Length: 204
Image (cartoon, rainbow, N blue to C red; front, side):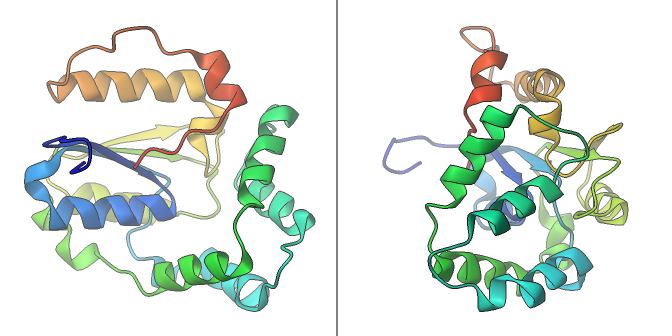
């Protein structure tokens, strides 16, 4: 934001990124126009799926990272299939990370807990969660929704942890409506769902 001279913005995070987004909103409230949490955690430390991932694979991960591990991990976030070409892009992007980054990122997540501070988040907040998410629990979403004043919770049926991959059109529509409601205005051009399905996007 500083490099681009942006005074503030909508901060969105999926999964681990949701924890980072919460921390940003707490540390920089004046620069957080809105907060979007997708398949986010309230307290990752007690999350059985995250702990098991660390214990069973990531804690002992070495280079070169096994493509089968990455594929299995990415598929575990889904409740239904996505386009094979898109999944292949996700796997190839993930394989660019060395083992030390996997370990450091997950270890940091397991040490994070912003739930006691949620009431200090004042930015308009949208929480999106798939009802078949086996990684971030429904109780996580309820803690987030109850802890952040005025937060909106949207639950997508028949979707897993990666709701923005499984329901890109619906997610884009909900995100656009939320952004507009925050006073940002409408996008200059329609959202291109074909691009969204073919190329993953990281929103910080």
